[in-house]
Image: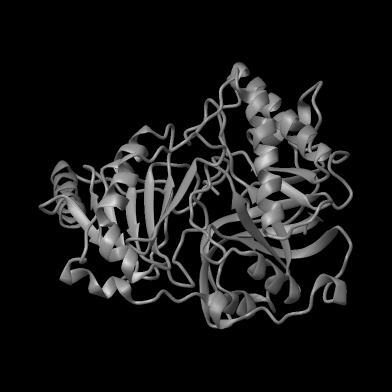
Length: 428
């Protein structure tokens, strides 16, 4: 999640002289040139040749498996991420990103189909989608191309169409054939199912919770279980800024079997006056609110999250004093709430007390969400008595408070960058 403007943190930077700034910029430019501006401006992976646009970074996950696959800055990621990526606790927003991962392939297809595959890539169309994603498998190269775009699909489409396949692959690309390792393979999920009585059935829970950008490995979740009862998961959305290599139906079943309760969260388009992209507009707010609900339910069902469970919409901070922007947000969330209820899921909203939470509390003529997850990084765990949230709203057992922003904690020998939460609310 993004930093709440309501709270302070170690974000302030020290003053620097012009000379220091110039040196810093030069060092950054040198680093970027080494990583993204090599000549020629082409990278290869399993025989796939990808031209690197100016300003894009290239990360080889086979060499750097702990790197976080981020969707909030333009980059090309090559390979499978490790089981425990070093992601920040909070990231929001979307830029154009290409992530190429290994896939099953047949040798005959490699030998005969390079030209055919290149021609198919040259015709690929990235169609507008609610979650701003596209995916295609290229068996001739043994890869799957996963694309995310920011405001529009045009730049991503041009990048994919300019990519080609060559056979045989370059000699220095042989290491990319090493199979990826997944934590899911190491832990098949033997934990008890919900039907076996492995955890309580009530729709709410009280206790300590944490949230982090990418779902941790099963090993990490097991190590942290004695310290926490609740964990957030980012199930989808166009503004979700971290890849989720661990987040599968099996992962959800396994951590539920450990005794965790989960906060399913969807990070879709943001307010017209927010700093994050993509954004909805006043004219599209109602339609996009409904579309987000439909997509969120689709993502929840794919993870095995059944009807009757909550899905929280992550609406990051926006300039609430802008009345037209505020009205657009309320229209969006009204439609999110109504549609999600119609689809038989419980609507929730996450956001800052200084923008969306305050506006929801005082709005007229809208359907408020059933559950509230509010961010106020004051270090206090009290869920009631807040000046911006009347105590008669969102009770009983309908509140979660994020009381501390991004910081690192270690439990069971595993360190993760998290936000801290106090929970007395609706969960899965």
